[in-house]
Image 1 (tube, rainbow over the protein chains, first blue to last red):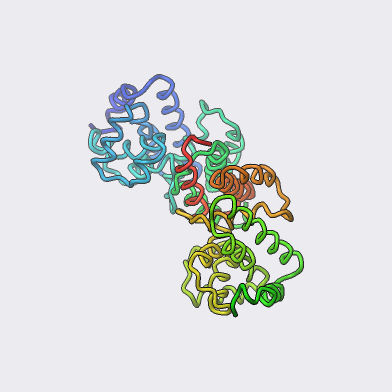
Image 2: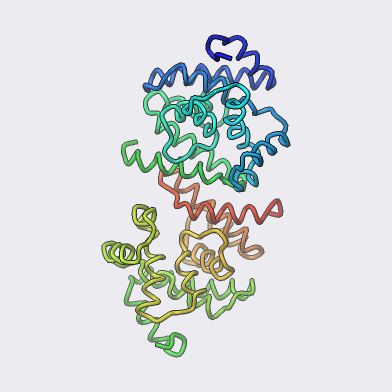
Length: 194
Length: 194
């Protein structure tokens, strides 16, 4: 389908993959991503589309996701790691094969929206931060991320990823290495400017 | 020199590299490492010796350490990273070249005593935990590490490294990737047993 021409059809397709709460979140991220894109000079249409698509597989059965990860030869540390991360990598595969999304920027934004990675593109940062701050989200620190996102996207993302890292460590959970590399990269580039 | 036969000479040599406070810490680590080794089945003599040597270069000038790192072709992320980590990697080189330490277990215990790494040996864990808990150390959480070290070395080390990670993130500082890998490895192996 032509994703923008058939916007209603796309939204119906997305809606069919998830529950109402996840769909509300999806629309919130799409909207927040467009706003951030306009603020920081990313492509607003791509940002909104990546937002609409970012959690396409979030509610899929774990076994279906695992099968796709194995079939696409994803890293062992991902398959053996936290299942909460799978939907992003699976989503990037599925929106390409089932919906015909070919734009590499959008595919990468979906792929890395949960873990982050070293050297994130502007669109990847926009979607990742939008996922943290859309209006339905509520967790300790979210208002500080929202405040930072008004003035400095990198600082907002470093703070958000740092919060994820400490949240996991405080619960004796593993931290996906890409997330630390994303955090380190932003801190290194931010220098003492924050 | 024969390190154990010339114990007094070795201690004088170590003392000459550092200030009194660092030397007191060094003796504390040596003693704590011997105790932990006896508790968990590592070699007590090796543990004590690694403790005596672990901070051999801690008070050396930064430029002298940098020169050694560069000459030995150490990873870029180490040279570009936090200088607080350098003394461990430099120390492992210097105690080999200047003191004639050849035991690979002791060299590794000195090399990784600050960062940790994935797949740490028992002796490496002993020295790393001893460095956190020796009696002169005082920081938030140290008593919990001391308590855990009485019963489970891996849990004590995971908690200690986790504390280091959150301490750094809360100060917007980078975390050396090996430290996260060490933490993840311990958490993975600990499972839900802690």
